[in-house]
Length: 125
Image (cartoon, rainbow, N blue to C red; front, side, top):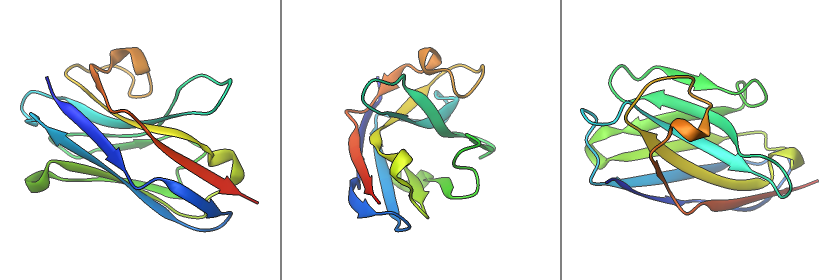
């Protein structure tokens, strides 16, 4: 079972940037189909932010972040990143990275097998 550890969260002002990292141990891209970033704000459902297919590197984004966030992976370090630019107060949430062995719609949380503990992102206006 892969273990995922997020880092890089923090408190910033609107318009600033953050870069989240997700370090994966026990991970091989031959076993895992895709990696994803999700977020959950208090009182709201967990929502997909972005995902990347481990082999071809194809990326997917939620409409709300598509022009501001970039997902990437550094395979030799078994690390995934989420570069977040032009942050808005509505981006405030706990951010989680996740991995899954199967396909399906990238934004469906129930299809992911492994989850990190989360890292908090707070954006103030």
